[in-house]
Image (cartoon, rainbow, N blue to C red; front, side, top):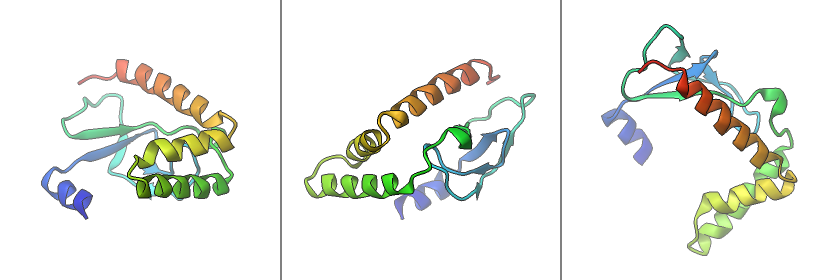
Length: 119
């Protein structure tokens, strides 16, 4: 896969906010180990991705929405359109706008977090 080859050439450290796993973003998924947990006293090195998850209790729990979104994204690709806008629109539609609110709150929280980092 292209991503895996790029990861070998350009290694990236992935650090979580108060966690050393990633369990999804808008949906709850299985925990996947990442490079480690970011510590406030550490400066952020180059080639580091910082992840701050949406709290699990706030995420969408209806996985059928994710299934519908994947199908919508694939249909868009067959029409030679972009996958993610179609998938995101489907998630937003079936969550009655909750996914957009989650993503906006995440953007705000990440911006506040970024402002507190030492580079």
